Length: 235
Image (cartoon, rainbow, N blue to C red; front, side, top):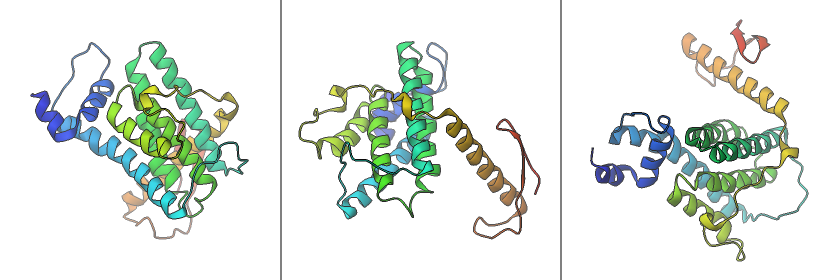
């Protein structure tokens, strides 16, 4: 496979991300333009669309970050900040131990939660605390993906940070690595939100199995919850 053809079709960042996340370093792996394109579709575009959503509505709202301002965060915002700091902790540890898979794969999972869970449940009540939380998450993710995706990360960072703060360093690759705020990590909240997301996923699966549309109201929906690892749908 010609790497130049793969780069022309998908971009160098997506090729790098695929190589970092597909299998442990040193092992054989499948490689094709289609496999790299899957990264573009399932990760890069998801991150970019979340970033674009934020930019669009921030511009409409003439919003700018105000560091140090006291905010009242919803439980959803608190969860995102908790999950974000847990991500920084885990990715930092993985890099320090030369574990490239665990330094990249968790970011992909977080971006999926950011887009498909947090953002979809925040649109109606988004502004104002939601803006600050999503901004923090996007800037932090840009820094975390910088070693693996140098160009996309710099584009996001320069627009979100440099365009607002004239004193900011001019590139994400010159910025400080994110620091963990342990006080924001709530492991119980993380587990509870994971459980709620799992229940929602099970509910969608049950609807699909019964050929019920997502917007169709249900008379009743019940779950049996023994633990986060042991779930069963009753109705």
